[in-house]
Image (cartoon, rainbow, N blue to C red; front, side):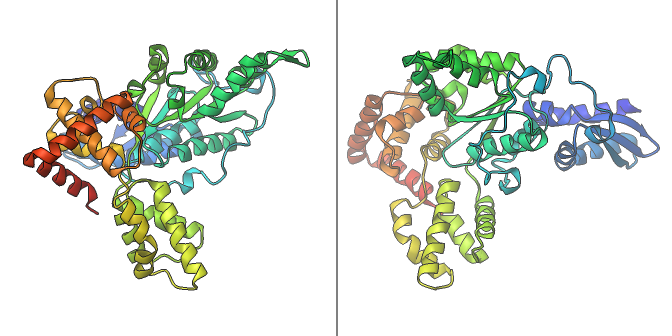
Amino acid sequence: MIELWTEAVRSIEPKVKPSHRDLWLRPIECLRLSEGKIVLRAPNRYHKEWFEDHFLPSILEDLQARSGRTYEVQFEIAEETAVRTPPPVAFPQPSIETRPVASKPSRDLDLRYTFDKFVVGPTNQFAHAAARMVAEAPASKWNPLFIYGGVGLGKTHLLHAVGQEIARQHPDWHIAFVTCERFVTDFIGSMMNQKRQGGVSLMEEFRTRYRETPDVLLVDDIQFLSNKDSSQDEFFHTFNALHHAHKQIVLTCDKLPGELPGLEDRLRSRFTWGLIAEVCHPDLETRVAILKRKAEIDQVELSDEVALYLGAHVKSNVRELEGALLRLAARASIEARPITKELAQETLQKFLASAPTGLTVEAIQREAAAYFDVKLHDLKGPKRHRAVAHPRMVAMYLARRLTSMSYPEIGSRFGGKDHSTVISAVRKIERLYAQDPSLRSVINTLESHLREP
């Protein structure tokens, strides 16, 4: 009878993303199926809840169609019912005995950033779930976890949350959190100053701190390694040492590994060894939920009407959204006025006028790719034929016109192109805009779509 369950699972697999199949579908084990009853085993409670919400209804529907009957489902939770056994040889868990020194979790972890304070929506749901799974079973399978997305969308929040959850479950583990910029600065300082302190050179101390001591290494903004050859070489060996020792690595980045300019292929390959999860711009409902959660934490009275107004007009990222609420709450407090939609309009008028939609280069790229019917990765890639080159130039022009980003920053968002390429594209579109009514109409249409609340 278990074969019936297997067939039902296979029936939905083609509709599921490969990463979701491996992470959420296949780990569920069918123990028994008989007499209208199914007993399943899930690795943990969080895994069970995800499976119930996303896959179980479709599987039960298929089962009913195959057998002509309904089924009651019961779950066993492996981590609650099974006797704990040592982890598989391929993925041993870090232990006190394998660490050179006993340490405490990193002081750099921000206590504000926990899983329970992270607002989950359709655009960040998978990244949140992946982070939770890694936190509950570090170094067991998804290593490294690579979280990518635009600025201010919650990548750093998830990174800290992973660290804090692992620290809560394993208080004797060493959780090392570091920005990539700090890693590079530490490395350069150690490399330039080789003096010995107490018999240990600074470089030896650096390598002990990053390669040997951590049970978990969390690195924020790994894109800072781009075009830094010596630092990339050092991080390559750091990555290898930790991965070989089965220590969990979590990285955040503003783009996919394949889109990082000036990154060695050997690092690019290693960044894809585990699981890649994207954090996208939140939709309106999620933005409103974020505002309500922030207002609750800060004890600010925020009506649904005002939250909806802010969420509809501040769309760039979570940081801008929370910043708008902060400005509004501050003015209301100073002037002893309630927070109303009218006060929100007054307070944010200048802010909204200067950045009417909180546009990002990524949003402009998506809009241009959709309008011209080209693939997003081609728009940001090296292809030069007109079907791609023209939309790319239009997107660069709009990015320069509608955002505050510099030419080099825009170039970095288009696959690491030189700033001179962006300048040339912007100037060409400016000339054509003045001469060609059809292009002018296209750009006005795109701009109108981008500015819509």
